[in-house]
Length: 344
Ligand code: SAH
Image (cartoon, rainbow, N blue to C red; front, side):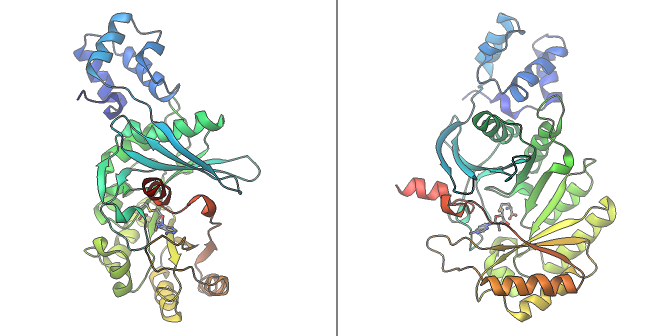
């Protein structure tokens, strides 16, 4: 199979143009066709010579993802199933704000995932492959083209573990951020990790003001190990220390995501442990009622428990909100649409 042009960052396209004896500015033109205009064939790139277009077409595949399925929720959230050239599928979600000012895209970073979190539909399928930088950006472009509006915010909370595909994810974030491409402000770009510490440390050294979110889901080691078995090699103490380093270095607040699962991680003991994990951390806690996944026994905590947690955590000085979970009627939770599709 030919290599994909979607593997190339701008500096790599510049090197490619040198190899093809082309002037450097051709790289920028090609890059803008790919990531500003979202071209789906080399024929569209009319300011490149025919000869260069055919050399590129011969050497490098250029496929845009195809929308295989699309479900619109009553609340306006749209969940897409996209397929790439090789038939691999991922999920992407578009979340328009109610006043239409913002359009947020939740993108996937891997097809499948190795982490096997007990509550996650993607965890059940294993990893198929990492996504290339351009394949990640293409999810944002696919939504922009489908809805016909500028994407204002992006979050890496779809399928996969971003920090196990670090280089490609970072390259994608930079393309999304680049004014010559999608021009989405760094502060409007977030990435969520299950807690891969070397990734958190690398992320703290990036110059852009991207936002870090961490899936905490339990502040007791035993509960976390049972819910998130593959991340157990990084302990909660090590995670807290990594977050302290990140905050010291970047001066930025971290978001901690906490799925509320009835009878599993929502006792008063669990709450006390979350309070203690958050003490001294510049963080914001986002409580998320779990979306039930077929085959898993988990149910969301009652609203009353979540409200109690919000007021208790706020009292202890940690800003806490309940995520406005949207799109549940279109299989909003990670991996669910893909699995439904596969079963049908
Ligand atoms: N691997 C990364 C990003 C993908 S998961 C991470 O772990 O953060 C993105 C978010 O979706 C995580 O917070 C994850 O816990 C959440 N999620 C997974 N399954 C869910 C479910 N059944 N209901 C609600 N949220 C879920």
